[in-house]
Length: 202
Image (cartoon, rainbow, N blue to C red; front, side, top):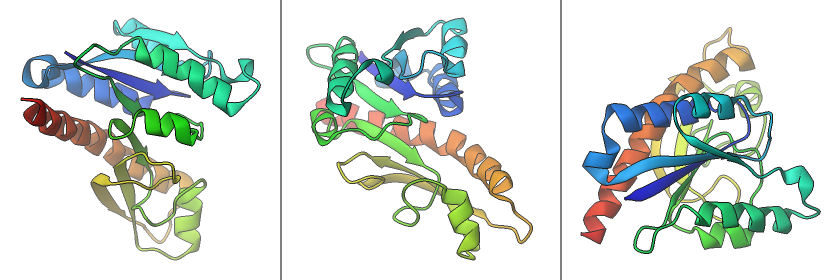
């Protein structure tokens, strides 16, 4: 059984969508995979309460307790590695995890570290995406699921969804429309990843 470990920093709406899809679509039976744990770098993250209420194991690795980014990433990796099994390394899913990961951490989980970004990458990497999209006069925005590499918001693209940018849009309105697509494509991309890697392992 491949364990999926989800990392969050806030409400975890994408985490909720992934967990719901895993249960609804029977990932353990279909792909030999389950959501094993939700880990946050913030003890106050609201998504932790939801995860516990729905029977998911939760852990906190508070980044404020570590003097360096490298020390935090090493501590986080030790917790993640506790969910690995000899023949089934954990899939690590970033779902609103608001930390820039060190190259060493990214290399450790290369090929099995996924992220979602609220733009049609490679356009608009980084922060304040929706504000920048509107300011640039774009007519289309969207979301991208990708494998994580050492370069911020890059890496092989697994799934994308586009939404129109309306003339009257505020960043908040556009963000809400993009988020609804994130909730759709992130579980879909993970399921495709699991299907592909299960076939390779077989």
